[in-house]
Length: 104
Image (tube, rainbow, N blue to C red):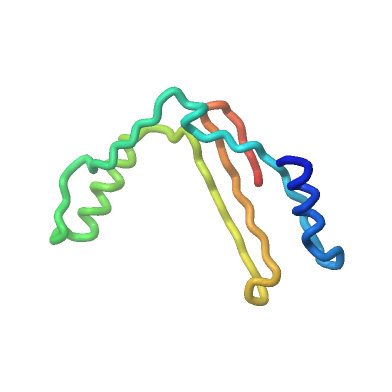
C-alpha cells in the first residue's frame, strides 16, 4: 500500500475507536503465478432437472473427486454483534503451489 494511502486510511478513523492491526499483503493474481489454469465446468455425467437431488449430489461429488488437489484454498469467517457496529473477519489463504499460508 502506498505510504500516502496508508496514512490517509489510518487518519480517517477517529482516535477514540478501537482498532485492530492489519497486515498489508501485495496481491498477486493467480494468472501471474501459475503457468496454466484450466476451468472445466462439465459434470462427469449429464443430469436433468427431473433427476433426484440425491442423484445430482452423487454426480457433483464424483466430478469434484476427479479434479485433484486445489492450487489455492481459501477459508473465511466473520461475525458481528450489535448490528454491524462491532465485528471482525478473517481469511486463511493456502497457496499449495508455493507451499505458503497467508492469514488476513
